[in-house]
Image (spheres, rainbow, N blue to C red):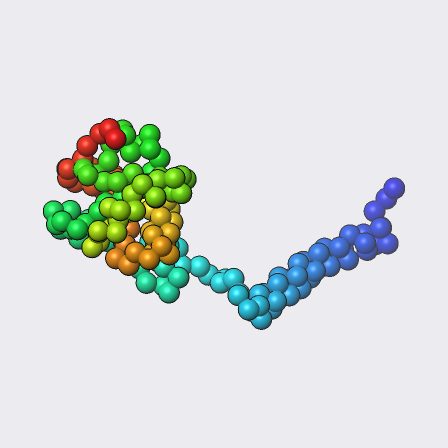
Amino acid sequence: MTLTYRNLKPLRQMLWQVPALLAMAVLLAIGVNHWRAQAIPLIGDWSEEARFADASGESLIISLDEARALFGKSGTVFVDARSAAEYERGHIQGALCIPWQAVDSYFMAAVGQLEKAEAIVTYCDGVSCDLSHELTLFLKEMGFENVRVLVNGWSVWRDAGLPTEEGS
């Protein structure tokens, strides 16, 4: 079969119809999203301040210096949100172990100590770790007010040479 103008016509139609349909679909999606009650932001804020915030948008982050200052004060409780196995390999000295994956079983055992706390600092390990953030939100829902997150807490604490311990 030889290529003629007639044979190329469907191909040329497809070459402009496909991008036109895609453009219409994108515009329709943006329009629907705009008028939704809970629109999805087209450009998200993925900063630490935004990721580690409560429902009202207030930052839950505590700096290493602030956490260090609280560490020496009575009434401050540090809470490790990592697994029990990670906690046993090493944790901030005196920290409670409340793994986020098993929060229901660990929370009841620790609630007495948490109720006495004037400040609670949660932590896990890794900049992208959200366990401490989830635990902080849970504790706030349970009525604890002064709860903060030490982002990448275990690593920054250990690397700063601050007091740590192993075991349970």
